[in-house]
Image (cartoon, rainbow, N blue to C red):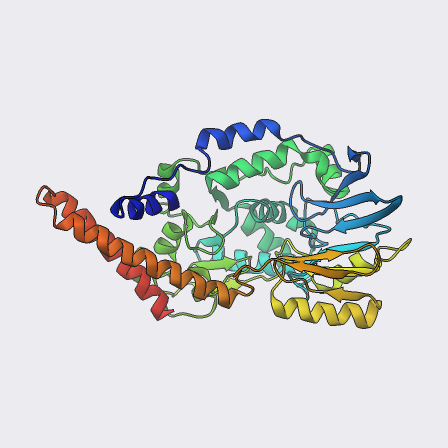
Length: 444
């Protein structure tokens, strides 16, 4: 799409069209050169470079990577954490603790906060769901397709074992009598991948599976595959639970379910993941009284709840625990990456004060020599956005250029005497959609 846009500009300037970097066919064919690897196996890249993948517990297949590099008869070990999993994610094993490293490159997504504990999360989840179903309402759960959906299914299946008092049993029966719909083709495909890789589950889940209890399958669970399946959910009269992507409500089938449910006070919109500023999900979570869905103003009368504990990332406590796991040899130095500026700075201070390890927060394009202590040896001079604010301003400039380009293209189209009325109508509708999108941003 980007190339088509650039080629339209080049065509008007009399320049030759550019070829795409790759085709869809080439993208598929490149998968042939991938090689699967198993956890906990040292792989020889060359005589001087060896790597090992360890379970990061973040999502199925995520890895912490150990890298051994030998130069000038000296071996240095660097550990790349990748995304470190939240310690109490259902289904998945806990992140692997690494015993030694010379240097650590570590994520810092939640370096400045703690998560809600799992037992409180399960109890709150059940209470919200059962109260909604009891009053005849639907529970709409915007969910990311990979990881979060499967975690919710596990929660629904396992929640019965958390307590046994009379009130809990009543709530649990309400839940078990309800239909649960997963309405996201990608989430359905991801769930099948989970079922095919149960050897990667944690020990507790494996024991349940051996007893015949598959946490991703239970009575009342249905998968909506086709668009007609999805539409039929909004014609049902029975209370139900609908899990649908996308997790921030900006695209996908979830928008249709919100349109049919958000105005009714019987229903609940239950958020279980981070909502980025500017998204529809963020507006709903933060108390907007009305929101626009498909260009239509909708009253937010449904109950809105947010359970923060469903995160695939380790919080500050478990990031620190990961560092303390290097018992045989603590890292000489830590590089913090993959986090907002505040989270990185808070975590840097905590590591240096409590663990006594110096920390560097590298900027884009910096190169370090780590033979002894890290030494900055070069920086790539590129105008790379370093914060979300810079990125937003950069995006605004790109959008402005695209609008200028669109204005020229549309003007050429509507001045074409051969343009048909139906083509003119389609252009008008697209312009209206764009106008509504811009108004949504301004109003938000």
